[in-house]
Length: 105
Image (cartoon, rainbow, N blue to C red; front, top):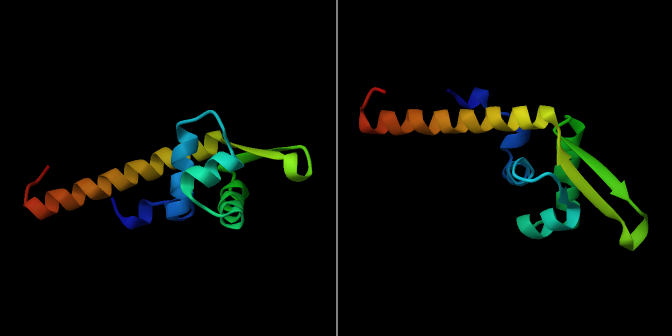
């Protein structure tokens, strides 16, 4: 596998971390992602908007103002893209490990 098999939207480290969280949870709130990933409000908002714009996550907003909550869920398309991206990463790492040892797999 080559870098061409990697999803450029998911590959960005902050978005990859967000997708990893969502792949292992039914949903995650904006506040949880912000604290867990160590991002600012504006940075997380930008990253999640990018994922939402390509259909990888859905955002649900409840309330207005300071008490509002935004919850994110991974879509079926997002789950497929994430699994494919992970598989490409693992294959690339395995290929490089095999090349480094001179072994054929």
